Image 1 (cartoon, rainbow, N blue to C red):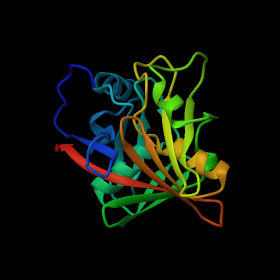
Image 2 (cartoon, one colour; image 1 turned 60 degrees about the vertical axis):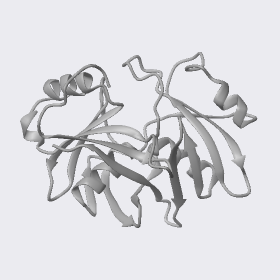
Image 3 (cartoon, one colour; image 1 turned 120 degrees about the vertical axis):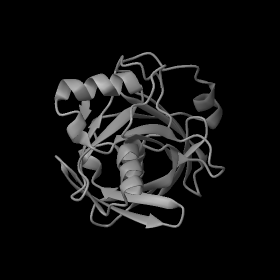
Length: 223
C-alpha cells in the first residue's frame, strides 16, 4: 500500500495468512459501493489504496461485489472473494461470471467457483523450491505469471510466487487464490500452497469441475 490514508467505510484485511497469522494478501473492502458509483471513481480509489485488489460491495444482502485492481476490473479473483465472504459472513457472492458459494470451516474460509472463470495466467513449473525463492523480481516476459515447484509432491505441498507483470505498481502478488485454483485444476488434486513471503492457500477440486479455495482471514483496519 502506498502513502494514502484509508477513508472511512473501508475495511482492510489480510487474506490467506500463514499458520502463524502473518503475511496474507492485503485487501480493501468498500462496504457501501454506492459511495463510489462510477468506474472512474472506483479505479481512482483502487490506485490510491495500492492493494492488489479492492472489493466494492454493491448489495451486501445478495453478495453482489465488484473487484478492482489498481488498473482494471476483474471478472473473478480468489483472495477478494474469500476476504469479502469472511468479513460480510456471506454464503453466496454474485459476480458477472456466476455465483460463488462460501463456507466457514474453523479458522478457514472457503469459496467454491469454476476454474474457467479465472483470467488467463501462465503456470510455470520450476525444478526446485530454491529456484522459486531465488527470484528477485518478475522474470522477463509479458503477462500474468505463476511460478511453482513441489515442496512435497506426495503430500501436495507447493511453493509458489506470482507476478502480474501488468505495469500497475504490483510487482509481486503475495497470495493468489485464482492462480492456485488453476494449478489445482491442471494437476487434478488438492494442494497446500505456500506463496510469497509465507502465505498459505488450500485448494480442493470437486467431481463436478468446481474448485474450492480457502485460507485464513484477519482484520487489519475496521471501517
